[in-house]
Length: 316
Image (spheres, helix red, strand yellow):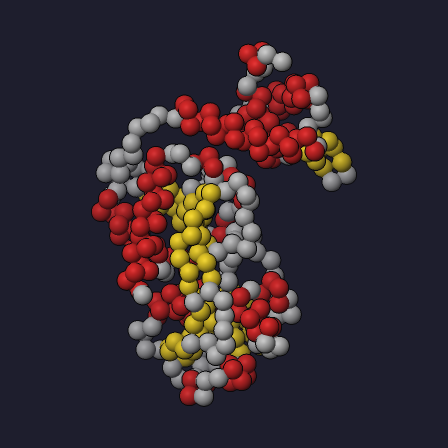
């Protein structure tokens, strides 16, 4: 086959089709009519001598050949975008770009204040749109609709770029009036009521149950290895809400240390070291391969990395 006779726009259509697995949504994203998208799918089938998408009782499903083509096509398009993107340097002082960053309130009370302070000095016209993990899914990140996601992740698509920002230990926060602080050990820890707090990854959350140890995360997995289990009275996905609940005299909150330290001087709570070992959590920054070579994006990634290093150095 002579490549000059191939309409390379078909690769763009194929890329979107295999992300959406839906002709109508793919047409909307590309700004073309559904009949035009259906015609493009027919041409793709002719080009690759393969159905590409097959209708089943569960909806449209990509063929094995389509799944093989997906990473190859994505790499071709990324390379093409790098060729045609202008090489102009990012000008932070004059830029008015909006950066959309998904971050939990753990990031909002640790990294974000220091980051915004630095941005105000270096790029005063930039706007930061902070989105919650429930606002974003993997497809949003893959398409570049969200610039960066900063969180801890159990699993990530292999195509995503990522760097490690920091690790954090865990601490317990209790009311200054809670008598458990005077007799602090594993048994007294287990005798109290607890607030579970976590928002790992991204996407809309689902209901939690105290018996589902595998989904409960670091703290409860560590207790399970000891053959123990805590009594969870409240589930929340917000660290700041959990910290407020710690002011009640009968609750214990176990959460990342840097978040706990944000209220260490309030006088209403005390921070205690957990009476058992909990593995440290890893914080990652993740972005789409579509944004890997964008000059503005590279500047912001480097700034976040630098601010993170400075933040940890000051706290250590």
